[in-house]
Length: 229
Image 1 (cartoon, one colour):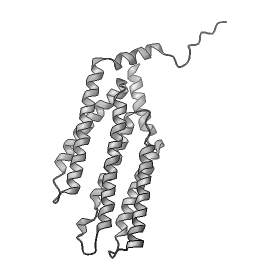
Image 2 (tube, rainbow, N blue to C red; image 1 turned 135 degrees about the vertical axis):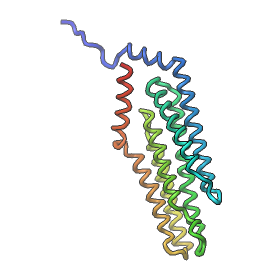
Image 3 (tube, one colour; image 1 turned 120 degrees about the vertical axis):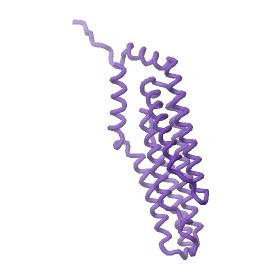
Image 4 (spheres, rainbow, N blue to C red; image 1 turned 45 degrees about the vertical axis):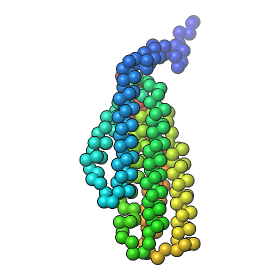
């Protein structure tokens, strides 16, 4: 008897369809729109956060956030189509680079919060300390990293988590220097350090928890696989 089994892992028709989609004119247009949308949203978001944290009084944020959120969602959706439906090879690289840009933004907010606590003196107004807005921005940074992670199948956030763990260790060193060697006359000041430290550690741990996001990634991958058939 002859063995008529189909050789495993070989599907020439599927490979041909993927190649056609990847090299089509539509693929380049989709990539361009996705790239532009995400770039505008991330650059605009970085500018908005920097302005909000450094200007006094704080500029209005609701309307700019809404506009940036809408263009980011549009760019994210188009980028998802570029990566998953058109099998674009450039967008995954762009997304990985942008993820480190988001990580840099998280570190900027975190370090700025640490410095505000370190420089705080007894009698200074409470507004000089990092408030809830710092926590909200850190959470937004985590959600941005997660959204980028979901776009690409073969993508790990482990390096990002390691950087955050290193930053948290540096924060602990600053805390020891501040409260042990220098001393602080402000009672309860260390609670601000603790909430920032806990927030960044939780984000780092969540970035390592791949199992939490596997069902979402699996759903996205299966939907696009079904459309290719």
